[in-house]
Image (cartoon, rainbow, N blue to C red; front, top):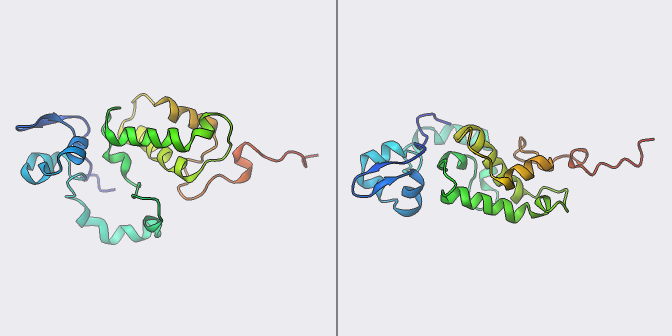
Length: 173
């Protein structure tokens, strides 16, 4: 990703609005992108000020039509859009998705990682590793990670049978 195209994490002063972060602009008041040069500078990804430069050439080879799959919105750079703040709406949305779609893993009655569980887990993994290193990992995220059911490094495939923790050992001898 283009390094210059990352929203500032944390809050900054917006004239007449107060101390807000880019998530506030994105979710509550997108018009601030138009009205304030400072907001455009601090939140280039939110304000869409950086798509044009690299969209044409790098999208095709990196994603292989993955964007056209039918899972709602494209999650490839969502971790960059979240503020390092547990009250950020996108953060809460991902935790909700994990708690809904990974319920079987969290409840310890499933060894299968559905795509709808894997996807927000991958976003949160990048979020904790790249966007907010050192931030306390949410309990649900830690639990799903430690269960080892989801292969967070492979964006397109659930783990092979042997890695799911239900390996068939009946034919070992």
